[in-house]
Length: 250
Image (cartoon, rainbow, N blue to C red):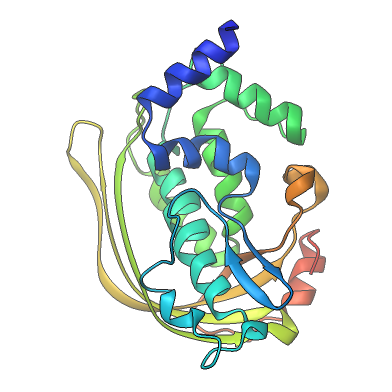
């Protein structure tokens, strides 16, 4: 076994399953991508192998037509956006671990080899992926909060409890837009267990746009669409124009 493979195996033994995804492998693979084939929505991810409890009702094709992508929207927001991109940034956004780290180094270099995106730290890695999923006001709000957190060199980063429950979805697939209503709360704790940030339970609407990242942003085999969080509340955003203005594809 090569040194690089030995390091990878060691990292996989140390890091928890979801944390590995948030920090490395799932970022590269597009993070639990929801794909659509022949009018049927299939969730393909390694975080949960079954239907998400919150999203399962939307798998009822008689009540929620697959063409409206209810389950895809629910799954994309709860898993891809919140549980992985947002949580990953809150965990490692204040990390001081650099590319020289024996665990992170090979993963960050592999990410560069595959995508051409240069990131030299755990913080840069998590921030890069977060910024593919969160834009405008939602991005600025979270970045301000994360920047206020203390830095840490702990491999595991902060401990983050993100609780999200989808209560309503308004799909507008023909214009690449959707509104999703959720109940959310979260706690961010230091590696030592000190409470750093608490968001109490809130009922929120989010505006999502279905976009496709430029080719340099994803592994070629996974050039699929994602649902990006572009506004807090229900906003009349032209998602096709949003994509064009940000160098994305609708």
